[in-house]
Length: 73
Image (cartoon, rainbow, N blue to C red; front, top):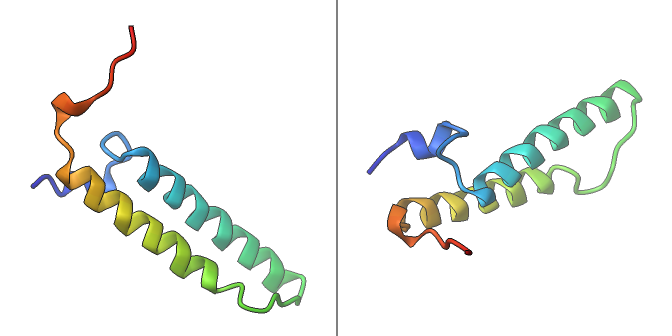
């Protein structure tokens, strides 16, 4: 099992990459809300959703095989 599939963007699949981007953008939005002294009900739930999406992507990435790539010719 290659654990670099968890933290190396070059080895992440699209689910992991999208969820990592979502986590970063949610964090930035959260910081902006704090600076503006605003709140959004259940905003922190986004962290749970993105984290779950990342876990699903990680499981898919661990169980996929390199030869399973779909090449379109």
